[in-house]
Length: 430
Image 1: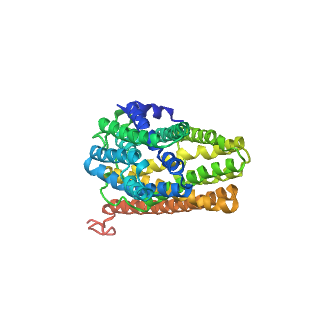
Image 2: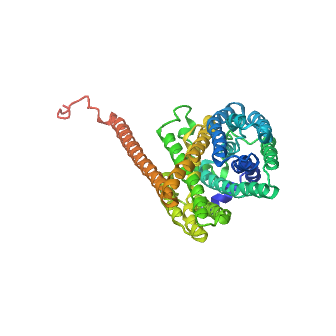
Image 3: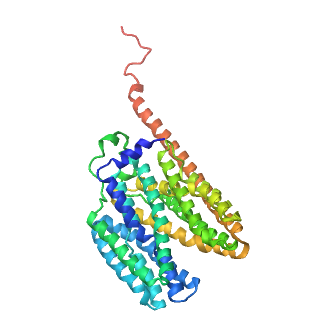
């Protein structure tokens, strides 16, 4: 294992402070789904379907706005984007309790598009700060930080709402928290452009050729494959969220949901650590295949403790799969388009989350959690196998192109030596 590369990442100037700032900034943004849902159900006394419609509108806004905000960061830097999105988020989350439901739906879509792009900005800044040779370890650390924030944020929101008996106060705190995250990042001003030269201790391992030096043509079939893996990964993750609740509710053990989710996230953190420390990590499509296959048994649990056991193998593949896609995006695009590409990556994650929950919900309503996880897991496995086939085809095509180029180069070098002599070989000199 390459544990020394984790030390190399954390030894970079300002990296430990940046990791801490990004973790704190993420926590408020992880609680919005729980807070908005409970606000509509508890305070407005509306159905879960109506709450789901509001979160869906916000999610649509996120998917549309993420690449646009990423492109704005590329062009104008992070500070103008943080100022705009911080103000909008502060106003929206404080107005949610008093907005009529129909107005809330429209406002959710608009403000979702202008949500503070913490995730995109942090990952874009990591790509600019960290040399390519240790970028996989940096994104593994980032994926572990994401899991930690998702363990803290929603739990705090549920605790606050259940203790207060209403969600309005929590929404106010959420608005100020997200605005504070924007203010912290504004003051920190994370770097989004790469420095002129890589760090000395890892400079020898950095590849200077490839997509990052190219200015155009980055939105290729390979990049689309990365986005497909991102979306499929979040399809299975959001489906697992729903399956956990459905399994526990079916056995009257819903109170253990928090414990199961914490163990699931902890397993994901462990998997992310191992992924970053491996000398030869598994390809993202293979990781997606493992994630889909290992998640299928989750729907078969008949008790909370068995569900915890079955969630561990699935969790081990979560963070590595997402980290591998982020790393792939950072290598697949030129630096001047990295913000837009990271925005598209976030949009793919959001789209997958939006699809996974209703997809498994339909199957669970008709056939139960076991069949629901089997159907979604099988779908994700098929996507992974298709991705593996595409990668194999691209690899063979690249090998053929390289062999042809080597053959042509060898022919060009040999050509001068093969020129015929001016005097025929059979003539003798008198």
